Amino acid sequence: MFGFIYLFILISAYKWYMKPFTLKQIWLMAGIGLGFFLLYTCASIVLSLFGIDVGIFVTGPFKLPVIMVGFGIFLLFDRLSFHNRIINRIAQSAFAVYLITEYPATRTLLWKHLFVLKGLYQPPFAILWILGILLAIYIACILIDFVRQGLFAVTVDRNRGRWSELVWNGIESKSKHLQEERTLS
Image (cartoon, rainbow, N blue to C red; front, top):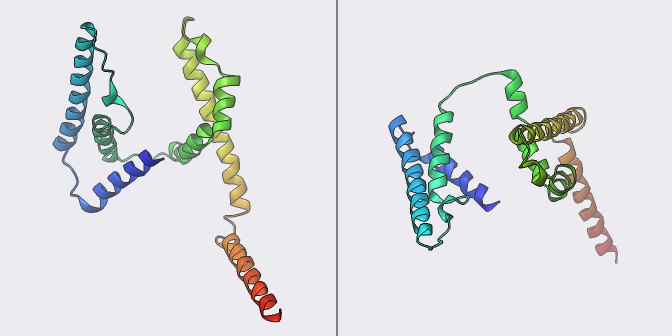
């Protein structure tokens, strides 16, 4: 969670306070990040030949080279303008797919009960099986989110703010009731 907050702050600071990077700067940033990654990987391989195992820690999530490459790619795609109703509708559900699949109970159900991938590594066309499984999970999660969007359209979104007003009024009336009881006793 803190990694995503960090990335949100990084992107917000770029959008709010910095001049947009030129295409040359974007490619340079991504190239430097990739260069660090390749240099460290090559150094780790050479050191491992001499029996020194340092591991490849520079490729972990939220490490500087990874962020440089990722941010550069983000900025490259940010320059593109693309409008397609179907793709935009599916993209609205991307965060819901993430939340559904990262929920611990769902993750356990998917990867320990329904799709145990340990046995899929050896057979021919294993990558196609794995991609098919991932696509099926993505489509199922999108359909679940479409159901959620439909339910919200006929309940919560019909009267925007009504639910929060009901909750607020309920809290307010409860506190008034408690104050009246205190003054009577």
